[in-house]
Amino acid sequence: MSLHLIFSATGLTSCTRRCSRGDKFLLLGDGIYAHAQALEAGIEPVDLFLLAPDAQARGVGSDLTGTLLRLEYPDFVALTEQCSPIVSWKE
Amino acid sequence: MKRYLFIISRTPYGSTHALEQLEAAMVAAVFDGRVAILCRDQGVWNLQGNQDGAPQGQKTVSRVLAALPTYDIEELYVCADSLSSQQIQPDASLDIKPLTFVEQQSLIAASDVVITAQP
Image (cartoon, chains in turn blue, purple):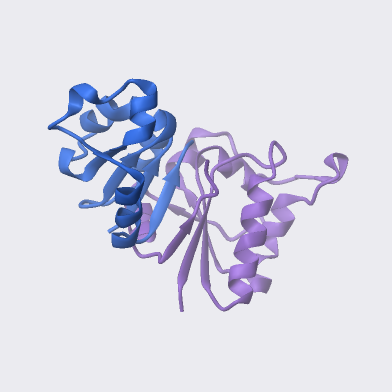
């Protein structure tokens, strides 16, 4: 199971073309803004995460409580331990 | 043997991304990794023929790509969709295998390590 780190909306598009079923997706940096697009692209809410500090900084995601899980850095680390390979997408 | 996949997603010469990815790939191969390279999106321009890095004071990226088999890197892939959406005339000396999105999914899932050098 791959973990996809998504840093932008463009990166999300590149990723969704090449990811597999059951993969995990973490939105971070400006990738946070692409959360609606990620759900529209068919990513299961249970597989989609926001990095909490980045979401908080951008004022995004508080309305998504109960839909998407927001991860603190220790959760992020735990996720990287569970998944392989880990792939970053920015462009 | 670990399977490495290096993904090149930027143009040559505009940044050092492509050359740095290729140098890292060659190092991985020297240390007995099984290495594959995938060019996608703007990264397909690295495959263009008639490149000359000399005016930029840089290595010619297409020549570095052509030398990959010397390092036992035999898997040079390109995103078929990205290839067809750009007006590219690939360097004839390169043995390039176009992959569909589904084939790229399998390639990524089958790799132990995927290096994108992003962001």
